[in-house]
Structures are given as structure tokens and as C-alpha cells.
Image (cartoon, rainbow, N blue to C red; front, side, top):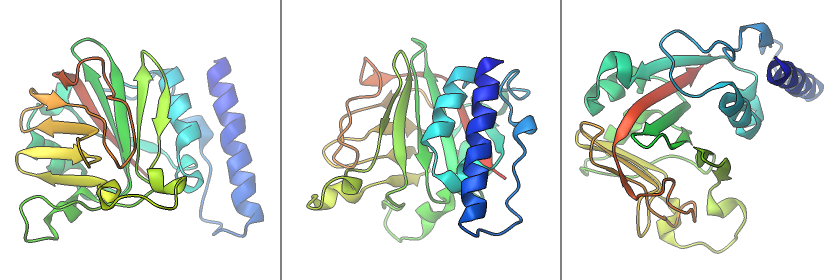
Length: 217
């Protein structure tokens, strides 16, 4: 309950900040509907504390929105194509991954996943520098795009999001921060140039226990 109150005060502060900047009045704050405790029906991750942490990391204009569970592997199965079909019309999205060793991490994805089809190339990167990756358990850490903090970065540090029928990739350049295969079984997390991150789980190769994707409204 204390976490819920803290988040409500945090979101109210953001809302006042937006009003002072003259943003459209249609942006409404509905903190009473934020699905903290209990979590939404069908939700396995994140828990209250993890959701609170993520909300402090979001770009301000999305922190006043409501999260909507779009996909959960526990209900919709482990097909990557099913995941795409359920989330690709939403921008942005939050991906949460819990491994079979109960490590939790994920990514805030700035663009529509349908943008993966804009190029004739089989696998082409897209996205913006608002994309970030994070770990939640056993430790909480956010990895932002290196371009936010460094002026000179390699071309490989602009690899945000990519995907095709067989793989979903977040972060690139000498490794992938998150890579999910077609059945969420043989997955990987490595250091990459885009976020200059450590691998997000203790074993770079992992199997997903649960994958959930949220949109905003």
C-alpha cells in the first residue's frame, strides 16, 4: 500500500508538470486504475515493486498513461508470431521476461513492432533512442542508449529493435541485449554497443518461463 501511495504522488507530480508546460488537457491521470496490487488478470510479472520501478524510468508522457496487458505466454502460448500479432499495433510497448531461473528483465520499445516489415531486408533495425533495457531481479538497473551520454558513438550503437518470423532482437552491435527465438526457448542476452550493457541474466543463454508485453492507453 505504501508503494501504491508513493506511485500515486509521483504520477500526480508528473501530471502537474505536464499541465504547467501547456500540454493538451486530454491527458488525464487515473492513478486509481494503475494495476499495482493486485496485478491485472492473467499477469505474472511485474510485481508491485517492479512496476513502481519501471514507472519511474518511463518517459514522462507515458508515465501518465495506463498499462494494458497485450500478450502473456501463459495464456497465448510461446509462438513469436502470436506475440507479434498481439502487440504490433501498439506504440510503445514494455516487454517483461522471466527466465526459468526466475531472473526478470526486459525492454521499453519505442516503436511499433510492425515497423520490422518496412525494409525489404530480412532483418533490419529500427527504433529510437528512447528505447531502453533493464533488469529487475535479482537487481534493478536501467541501461539507456549510449547516444544520450556520449557524442561520438559507433554506427553499431544505433541498433535498437529488429525482428522477423524467427527472431526478436533488442539492442545490437557485437552482441544482442535481448534475442528471443521463434518459440521463446533458445534465447540470449549479451553485451551490445547500443546500450553498453552487461548481459541481463547470469547465463547468456536462457529459456523463458514467462513473457509479457504491455501497451499504453
